[in-house]
Length: 431
Image (cartoon, rainbow, N blue to C red; front, side, top):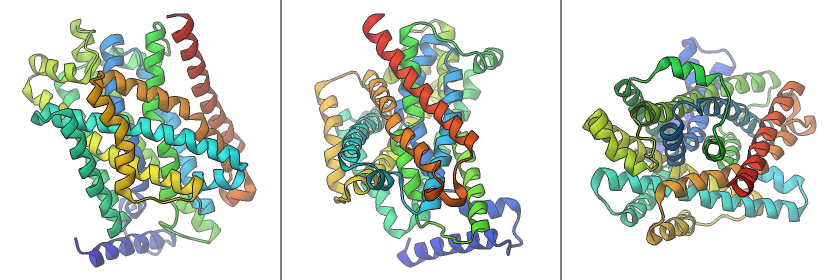
């Protein structure tokens, strides 16, 4: 696509959005919403990355539909947190990392940067491993070569940013759509027990320390620290309005973006666990604990089509989430320490741990699960500052949190911290 046509696409999107905010358009309600869709879809990729495959497949295979309530809870938290992140970028024109740098003492912000870089490494590990597995399962490409292909594809996808925000949003949204369609097909093929699904959606409980480990991993794979930082950045300068009434209207449209995108992500996450429960747990194959096993086992149980669909969804998940993860890493570094390095250098540096894990022959799926637990431990360092900033009227103006919103967000942060504390206790004292 020529650069000028892409710039025109961005300009038309902004113009359509401004007309909708001014109520100067005769378009349908759906057409009015369309210009505002995009940022949450990019952030939502983090919620359907390969780490979700690992944790949800293990959860479904070992415990059936037991942990469905964890996915529902995680995605409700995700909607709230991503809405706050988008609101922060809209109201202040600065992203979360920039606010941390400006509002906290320098030693604190530097420590947070180090923690978030560790989270970024864990994120890259999950995404690279997943995409490499996708290449291997579908095309027989060795894991190491698949990881290198992922690096090249990531740089190519992110290179679309030079054409404007809309082309990149379109590509990432299309990948999310492919992943969702794959799981529509998987659910149709698997024929799950809908009665059991309904029961476990509303009945919170665990079944031992391993289920707590997987639950924490599911939360870490669902509510992603780097997505929180990224979403606030995506709202900076996308559609700028100064009028207070228009700003509130813009925020309502962005809530729609979050609800739609996170709703799709929630469906995909639930579908992963439901497919594993209906296919593996229901047939007594509870030992299916890896993505490779799941891929191989699907064919005799559900046919070659299900196996192929699973592989395609994993590959698209890895490629899209790797691209988004790299972009988030840039936002984190630039926001905390005001440093920007070339994209290809950051890609090579963050790829190194993934290549090491692959070269050492560690179990890919277990590595993915542990990486998601690391992400879960990083969540308080993203959520707590976000809640603190969005409750301040001097920063947020008319978009400051209502007391109930702050209360719900604080409860969400507390739930995550409590799960992590229990996980440590179960791991070290319950064996």
